[in-house]
Image (cartoon, rainbow, N blue to C red; front, side):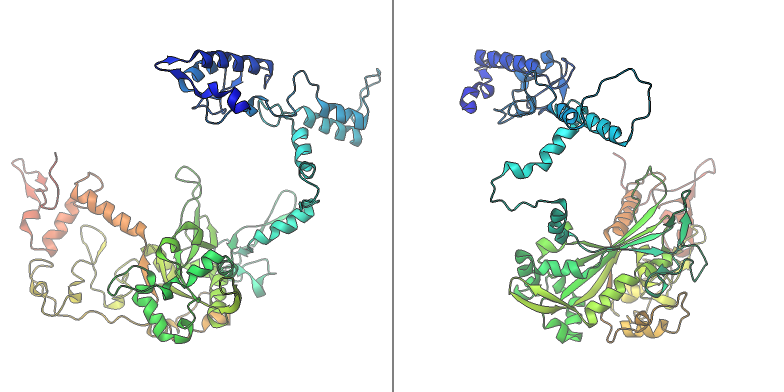
Length: 561
């Protein structure tokens, strides 16, 4: 009915002029609003124009101009934001909730007695009275008490044969199933150890002696460092009890692959190597392959305090390409708090996750597959890690700075120190990866001057060989026995360089090509190092007529427009 009666609201123009019916209707609307003011200020009217959408307050004249220029917001036939259709907004009504409070406690008047502090019952009355008069938000016609009463009486607004919970406890029981488990594990403030398992009851660090708690002014104990751990097993199990997702968890085995094309992680060498080493694991397509990613970020942004937080994220790669990299399938498993970079202690914080992953690999977890309507033993394996190069050093334990930063060359690295640049360079370390008859191997000018490279590339060690190199090294922490034992038949787990390190590299590359001052890598120090190591006289520093050194333009730098 109102849609027909108020059709004028969306017939603003007739040709190029304003429709007289629209003008008349706007005047009626403004008069209605004045008769049903939302706030005590008559100059505050909620504007229902297409731009303001009832979110801003103006005086009546401004609202009229807005409506003439922009029209009403769509489908606003019932003026609900202006009091129409609400029982609580009646012309000239008294505050029935305030009266309800007086009825419950009695309406007492001042009898001329001396003033005293109100007792507990009076305080309760005053609190309710305040709630009956306090608006829900600024400009609202509903009070806090009225809104509370409406929420608690929702059961009366629906038919008697409803299944709505009667108590708050029953509501909590219903929504409890949505909660995923998490643990708060106290840690040493310096990251030496976790107060976990056998060490859960001790109050000082076994390594450095730091206190576990600090005492507040009220005498309560507050942990100085808390690790948030979100077990991965329940979330993997939940993927299989969601029908449309459980069907996609075997996508990698059901869909044909195009040879020589990398369209999915299942096309990678690491995936195929895992399948060949562990055919029993590969025989169950529902077993999950995971990628582990970590990096640090500042939760307070650039302008907040100096605080570094390190999330550890796991991603299941069984899903198709359109799903496996979506945000809802990136599972936060650890949140490592620390005012500073955890550096070499990251593995301390990862103990709970490592133990759970070992459990998923060796034993598995009984899981219901809703798509097949059967239970199976779910197992999982880590395929690779994804992080930038510094985080790679934290994850692997291999230092990623200095001459031995490359995890492939290791002690056979040919890196050298730049005398003028003051940093380590890996220039001319990669010719050995070329084929033996490649012409660049014999070039004496393209790389280091007067130098050829006939060497073979370094041997890429397997996981078992790596473990043989490090198993006898001294440990900073007395690890649990389960973490000391290597996994049999270590797979070809790879590290993938994250986008952030590539972004930094390309930033420097573009700055150098564009010759951006204070950001380019082409500096006088770099030119002096070129003199020592390279045969490129056109890049050497030169002197002008006044004897001042200048850098000749490099062939890789772009000309200024």
